[in-house]
Amino acid sequence: MSEKLEIAAGNTPGASPPIGLGQWFAQRAERSPSRRALSFEGRRWTYAEMKAEIDRIATVLEDSGVVAHSRVAYLGFNHPTYYFSLFAAASLGAIFVPLNFRLAGPELAHIINDAQPHTLLIGTEHLAVIEGVRSQLACERYWCAHGETTDESLLPCIANATNATPVRTKPPVEVRAEDVAVIMYTSGTTGRPKGAMLTFGNLWWNNIADLYTLDVRPDDVMLLFGPLFHVAGLNAVNLALFMKGGHIVLHRHFEPGAILADIVREKITMFGAVPAMMLFLTRHPAFAQTDLSGVRIVFGGGAPFPEPLLKLLAAQGIAVQQGYGLTETSAVATMLTEEYALSKLGSVGKPHLLSQVRLIDNAGKVIDEPMMRGEICVRGPNVIPGYWRQPETTRAAIDADGWLRTGDVGYLDSDGFLFVCDRVKDMIISGGENIYPAELESVLFAHPAVAEVAIVGEDDQDWGERVVAVVALKPGCSLALEELTAFCEGKLARYKLPRRLVLLPTLPRNAVGKVLKFQLRDSIKHPSPPSA
Picture (cartoon, one colour):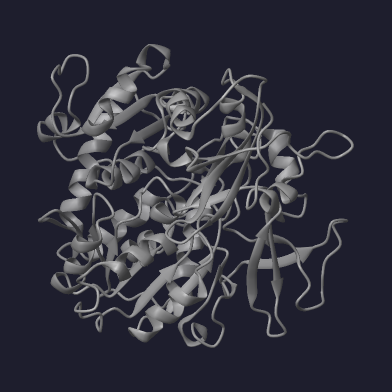
């Protein structure tokens, strides 16, 4: 797919629907200026106040050289500046690139240089990791997204610039549905990150589906504590809630005690979480005493919810509406609506409004019979057009008819409800984070004691899965888990590091030399002694 994606120009006013993030937020602020929009650590913004912050950042970005099609990257913990920058970039017709703050410096450098952002905004907590690789980056401008820096000449604070900037009076740039709004990086099975291009149309139609599927209301108050660099943080209901005129209470981190306190203090009506987060909430001492009666919507995703956890939550009056989706579906592909949350326990529901789901077998034939497993495919206006600068990867993932091959295995029951039961690929999901074995294997293979290595996942009560490194040693070598993880420091994000090391004499392989991971998963339960 070509890198150049043109913004609609010369259109007569009103010729294109205002589906751009900057466009519809401006309309919402005009209609509901005094409604509460955003709260963060004791500070609150109305829609008019939030729009003013967006316009000031847009002015600063434009004055520093950001134009249509420019990329604006953001690295930092959850913070209001994330939202201000997202909408500001869209107002200029630029492309927003949220970065995973859990990645190590070399990983970030690879992604940043692939996206080639004009501007990089950095939270104070992540200045050090960027300084370590800054000489390798091709960015033209750097800003401190929030907080203070020691040298304004090297890294100016964008808040200081916006405080001295008048509110931008230009209207948001008109965009087309096919124009790219956001590039979100998601690793592939080879470990090479892929930049999923989410268009303004993708985001718009996903939001419309959210509004109808979940019955989002203008008086809803949503607690948001998942990382905003995830597609779920970006666009799982929260942007739809802004469209509706609701209120988001944003947390910097996931902290169970603070979350439970804010559910009561802020009169929260909805929130979403991955299974590990929900588990930690239920284990907090304050959970049993927290009044959850005002919460009407709890949606879950990121990984399948264990049935015992769903039953525990149901006993507390929380019927989790599980959803299924990917970055490539702009957050949501299916959703289990409230009336089926208990009767279809474990299902991820039916297709989102405007989306289609089908299953195919190994030969690519569509599966019509219920209860038969197949690869899940999704089609709809929320499915991305492709991956940034990776046309071959795009063609492999999305066919000519627009069907996205997800790489996940599931089945449909006799009522048409989808159940996700396995993965075509060997991806590991730990705490809602996707971990790709090939990336880890590439790093670990460089260890001087390692002859062979394979990464597999095993069940973990808290995190869903944990990473297990299965290693065959070189003759005369020894290896401990602590040594292996120390070797990975600075090369891999900490959540990707192995939590268990299993030593085997050799790794099982098939006739063409491919490691048989299904055999490994069985053998690591009772490993044989390693060879000397």
